[in-house]
Image 1 (cartoon, rainbow, N blue to C red):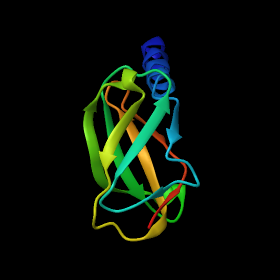
Image 2: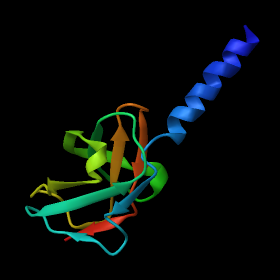
Image 3: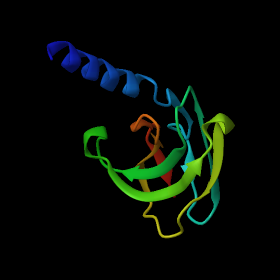
Length: 115
């Protein structure tokens, strides 16, 4: 029974390691304009479809999901064009989270600005 617990723990760790490894855009100097289109890019492996989410918060520990930007994205494309919501507040505390539906892990971008 103890070996089974270690096996399950190992699988859980592996699931998070196999998530999208890095969001390459948006990056720190990126500025999104409400109502325009923006490109999100990533590198790494994925075991399932991706969901692209927009987060906002003053610190990484306090990010709150604000919008789903796209769903059912093929990870082998390594990029997606999304519509920037037109009603976003102007702030420099936004981040994109790429959720891997296969591993249930999320990779986050740097903070970027909406103005």
